[in-house]
Amino acid sequence: MSKSHTDRPSGAVLVAGGAGAIGSAIVSRLEENGREVIVLDQKAPARASTAFQEADITCEASVTAALTSIVERFGVPDSLISAAGYLSDGPFLKMTSREIQAHLNVNLYGAFHVARQMAELMMGLGGKILFISSIHGQIGVPNRGAYAMSKAALGAMARAMAVELAPHRIRVNVLAPGAVNAGMGPDPKARGYWQSETPAMRIAEADEIARFAAMLTSDDASFLTGQTIALDGGASNLRPQRLIDVD
Image 1 (cartoon, rainbow, N blue to C red):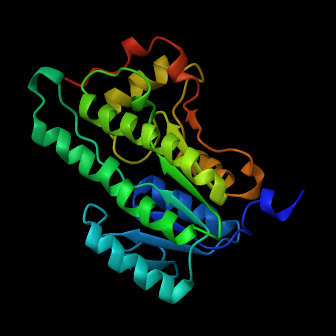
Image 2 (cartoon, rainbow, N blue to C red):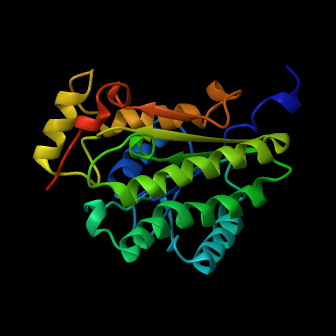
């Protein structure tokens, strides 16, 4: 296979939102795999030895300053994993434009700010961009409308990016977990419903998401781009309309 058809050699991985629950698991897995990791977040990662750059991804100027510093210190990262997220429950009939905007600011615009600037840096080099999304963007779940909107839009953006960036050897994919034993959904009742409605009869552990994220930003996925992969134990295939009601 010619060099033009292969991934750029695996190098540093920038994990936006790498101090969060799922982001931290991804960072740990990448480091265990021998990858150099840089965390981009508003708070420092759990491991003091992990490289860290503070930034507010909802502010484009903050992202620009942060990436400038990262490139000066480490060069252009080979991969971006966008794992920052925001979730707030609420019924559709009581939803406000302010609540929708809060979700879009982090889940869509924040991801866009980092991904667009990283894609510009990757031009001529190649690279991998992976968005951590949710199956909420693919199925209907009560009281998660604003979250679902932001995640569905993220998937649409990723597909357009994949087509435009493929000639530049930049792969773009989306990993859409179901319920995870970490992160933004700690309600035991909600988790119980997800477990009962998931064909695998359980929810995922954060490291299961992390292992798949590491694979998707490695040479093992060198011909995969423009895809949204539901890592959900089959939940998106079975009675999605009966999933959680958190009222």
